[in-house]
Image (cartoon, rainbow, N blue to C red):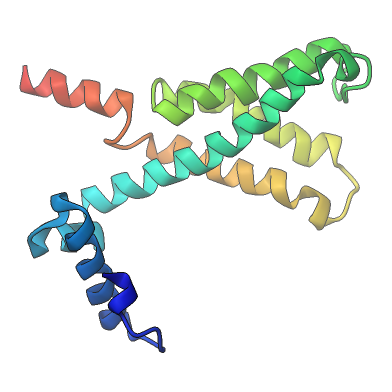
Length: 173
């Protein structure tokens, strides 16, 4: 158990051993050292877990912003930033589409790269147009989302995604 580990300054090897014992004890899938070593090395398994974590963290947190926009739709429809002159309502609908619909596709890993295009465009617009002239602190969060979504665009969703599961099923057939 992780509670049995003495929480002092660990070397990297001690930390991995402690995590290994915790995972083996609580998650049967990690029995045997080969599964655990694949998770903590640069293997396809660890990359897929990392991409899954990134997708859940980014899309899940952004989804809350989109839902808040839906809940406050009437108040935002006349005041939402309109960086390209398309109208407040159009800009708001585009933001909701990106933050809700596209986030759900990224979250489940279906058509991930296509769903990332509106998200990347949204955060480019926020960081470079809407917040132009503001200090870095104001643009930091949109830039973090932008960099995370761009990373997913280049890497893809990984094997722990609906698209990855469909590909694996097609290979077996």
